[in-house]
Length: 602
Image (cartoon, rainbow, N blue to C red):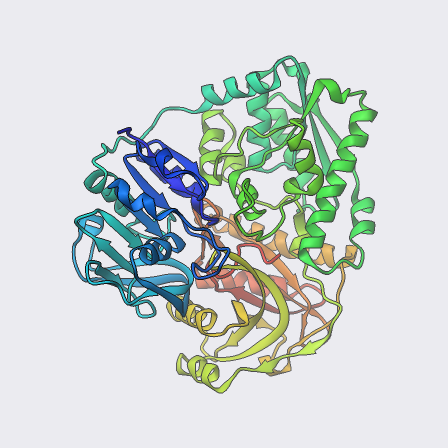
């Protein structure tokens, strides 16, 4: 028997995150596809079945050989894995009441998994199916208001299922639950690994690159900068060259900030800048669908990189393309195995980049890491905290924060039951004919949003959280909720969605709104109080203009997130200043968790 855990990848967004959590607890783990032979698990100390976007009763859904149950090895099923394990043990799995985001878990027993945790605790859900009718030998351990069998166990055989995700940071006692499975069920010793990862990473880069050089795509963000600096530690300075592409879709002052940061690191002379704003705007003209936007941007980056390599006399036979790709980019783009659902295609996962990866022509030193881990690596490397602590900014830039549509439409009334739900919490609401990307049940959704409004002056975050969760769980065509904060709008019934495409004027308006947000957050010393703060321009019109939507979120790794509860006076100061901008009719606040929404809108 080894000291490692076998993780079965059933297509979940968080499968790799399970491995990361075990790594933090000092336990080794390997990830296996579901078709792996049973014998391959025989020496594992335990097995964890991941979540996934499918339904276990679908004919072609991922399955495990039932012989795995005869190994007499502890098994923990998570989300889809919980349902699959239950089905293999004779339980029924059916379409149930969906749950996305936070839920209150009620324990019936302080079982092995939950020892030392409270009888009521917050967990993170993302499921549409539920386990029902357990066979007699299985014990129900916990439930939520919408899921009667949120956890079960076969105590004697050490088989456990949890419908929620203990691996995500928003499950309050998730790490404790995983640690209890490892120690109490699997008999492993918990030894958190605190060793520095810099030296192994530098060695890996040297091994991958060998006698070649690296041509790095640098965005100015923490991921690409940390990866670029890592390569500078592994290679002689003359064998790395950074390319910064000014797409015209960057934040105000972004290019100057990058120059300052690289100058401090002594790497400014290894940077080249290409101004390609006109090229990007021309190719994105008239493009509405977010996935198409992302793929076009990814393709343009590769084209510019290829042209730049010729311009600077770089021979492709002796150079690799370097990228600051991190793990969430990979998994949200469909994952390495192809089992995970595509939530959104990141620009560093375009078809052109994937082709280069297949040929072994790309190096990505951070591809196995998450954002918070990259920040810590940056600190160890000596990068300025202004860089390591800065808010993440997407590679496609403001293009995916500037929503487009060719169709016009008016706000629609909610169904009576939903209207009653909203009114009961002191709000009124409408359904807006504008879609955003979400992630529900580990799958991509592209659904309309609900806008709500109240006559009360203060922001009641607890009520808004409840309202958002209820609406997205109950309303099948919604994955995001926004609340009106201020502006020229009198009431939501007069809202309309107007046709809008990408153009320099709209990008300029969004850039100014984004700059206002950053300036005010800096003034109030609140930059570090949020993990990320997307600012979105949406063609929601009241008197001929558009709307700005604020999306402050808190997260650890970007895989899950909750909207940030900023001081109300700061929110109002931000909205007041943004409302002064020409062509801004209203300012909204996005009050949705991830899931069911993604952090970015597109």
